[in-house]
Length: 285
Length: 285
Image (cartoon, rainbow over all chains, first blue to last red; front, side, top):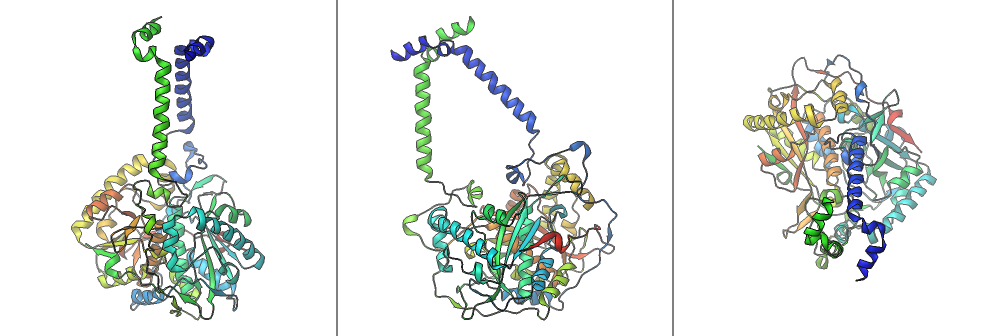
């Protein structure tokens, strides 16, 4: 049998029991060393985001990211009462996502700034405020963003997106051509910060950074509506790294949402959608 | 040598080349079959959430989840102009997370309903509206929720949470005792729906359900502030399954956020925090 000839001609195969025992020892040592070098793995919701880069831990000198100061009395802020909740619902109920924007008139940058100030009041895990808002008004930067997004979206629609997804988007009449990226007077790119840095330059964990940044984006939508501005929440698939690179954002920031902001084009239409009724989204106990 | 004796006494070990070739064949067949049974894996942001249960795909009869209808003219909604953005910022700038609530006065349920109506105006991936709001006012249900959360939080603080996390929370003076869960007149539990069902009972993908639901939660915070109500955004670690079970929510719903809602206790204090300035969160291009 040829296999047996092969075995008798090979030192490794002839001494296979010792060889296997040797391999076993290497495997055991590798595992022990690997575990020792990584330290204990604890369950946190952030684990999935820490896959790329482990955070340094100097457990012998733990300092909270925030200063420890005495608490202060709570002072109630403004409200919209009487009927504040109802009036807020009426305000937000008029919001619609639009997909065609006119370039003029261009709202003053100070209005966009106030909207982002409002977004910055969002709560965040351990008050880490893990968001960066990039506001684009230069036409050439908008053009570069459009090129990156359209290139990726063409691949998304034709290859990466599941057929059901493409089908589900059909009633919204979207495709990979994104005129709004150059038409809209402003683009807002919202980055979530996976981690941050404390004053002494040490890395600071950003707990629940995606949830916190999305909540902040929700407040931004309220501010835009209050200002009479329209927008479109988009999450361009696979464009994050190229856009982060274009805008020179650091490696700890990841693109979460891209919003064109402005006024609708004359004759702008929207999908004939209805929203779920209260009884479809609310359960009381 | 004892190993050699062992080998000559064992059929498997004596015929090891055939045995290894057999194992190799089984491994190759297993992999081919596994790939074939799963179909091609496409990259989507939702992959991580589909790990638990693959969605059924009937690609030969794809229907969009929404009806395909002609688009309708966009009608602008209300705004808060003049100075709408500034006024909205002033409203939201007064919001603070509080941790001590008084049981009375209890706001009317209709106010909470209006806040959730507002939250339901949030945009969502392919208009899937992937959220369920559970509002708890019955004392016994609040008590059960508190027991579940405190039990898990005790383990979280002592074992699951990373030491740095516990340290970062120290300035907020939190621990596993959550009096607000029974003191606050309302608890709102926000579930994200990982998938939904179309009218013919088929499963419907919910794209970006966590981002959409968090945006909705951001709008809820605006509505609560407009109503003069205070809250606290919490993400109780590892309590989701027990709370979902307590409230009889279906398997496609996962707890994202738990908010106590009400008025602050007299003498309520808050951490002496500052928010990042605009220049720390905004970059213009």
